[in-house]
Length: 349
Ligand code: SAM
Ligand code: SF4
Ligand code: SF4
Image (cartoon, rainbow, N blue to C red; front, side):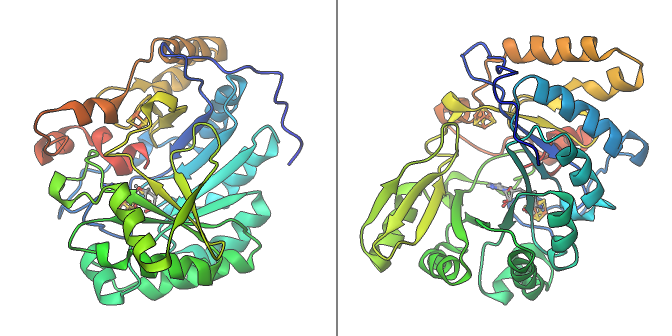
């Protein structure tokens, strides 16, 4: 990758002064797991294939975001490695050399097959989601018997040369909260930084309830009980994770999205696989950029649309949710079926 031209494009600011720095792109709504906190239903309404952005269309929009000062793109889904020929998209996005970070979040199942190609194509960072070290528990959580494949995927990523691999673990009370210390030890063994994520009431989490959320403070206390005191580590601006260091040097992170949301510094937008631009994970409406793109709108018109929307942005979804006197699921199943854009796996987690 070439050196990014950091000075040439100052970021646009939203109505609360937050820059647009990072974009998550969902490349597919399909998934080969059925994590109970994300896709617990039997059936889903999938977006029609003809609506899905081509790699060239994604690259066009990415280029426009980069002009607005975006420096970080993360490919996600659904399970992004189910998208045919994903390394080719990585190659297209990396080609401009204008990004500081090109990253992928994956459940790891297909990583052993694709890690090398992704690395060669210019992918810089990988986050692998893994919530348990127990294969029977993995089956209960995901409805598939593929725990070993995730571990193989992690190994393959390391062997392909990825460094600073992160392992994302959603902690759910009475499900895997007893594995917090084991997961930290696993991260240490695997040279990966484990990041615990609070269970969020995002679209799709139709089994969510507040009593299943294990607050970040409790997660840290569980780690400290086992390993001794943890000191805080500096984190880059806009980064969602609070980071901690144990006496032996092991670093772990906690993402307190539910109990201590970080909306104040949120610099990220989201693009769905069919080109809808969302400015918050919790937003009920997005802007259809694909309609503009396929309708022949000029780059300037699309850029102005994005700029105007971002400049008017006041979203603080997780903070608003936290202020609710009673908190239940965000969208009932019937609403998700009517509009799959409300699903986390469509808009990109
Ligand atoms: N399939 C890929 C994966 O699982 O890594 C990428 C998409 S997934 C939606 C992205 C991240 O969102 C994963 O780390 C997953 O654990 C997290 N996630 C999904 N539902 C969540 C929820 N209800 N609360 C917190 N995190 C969630
Ligand atoms: Fe699939 Fe990722 Fe959601 Fe699990 S968290 S169901 S792997 S999209
Ligand atoms: Fe950003 Fe919305 Fe998440 Fe808050 S809830 S951190 S504004 S995406």
